[in-house]
Image 1: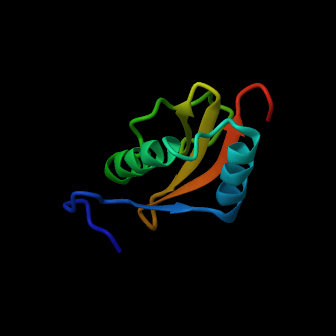
Image 2: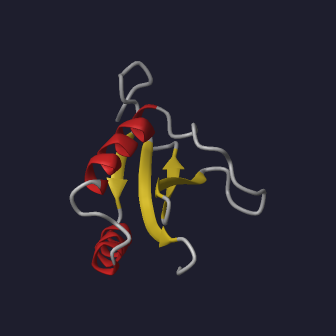
Image 3: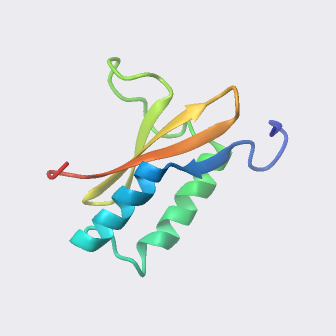
Length: 98
């Protein structure tokens, strides 16, 4: 279990769905396999420190579900599980396609 005093109080985990959709987006050319993994590492660090930094979405979605933009064409959806202090990277959505 993590504690709030740690520099990274949340663990960040990728789901199988996230991994599969990431690979799909790479194959389709929406994710640059040379540059975007570094951006993902930065996003993981941000979410580990403060997962609620991203703006909350419309009221019809749960408050713990958010998204962050990887690049102009790709959104990463995640959810925060407070009981476990875990952030689950859930899906990769291609803007205008998915």
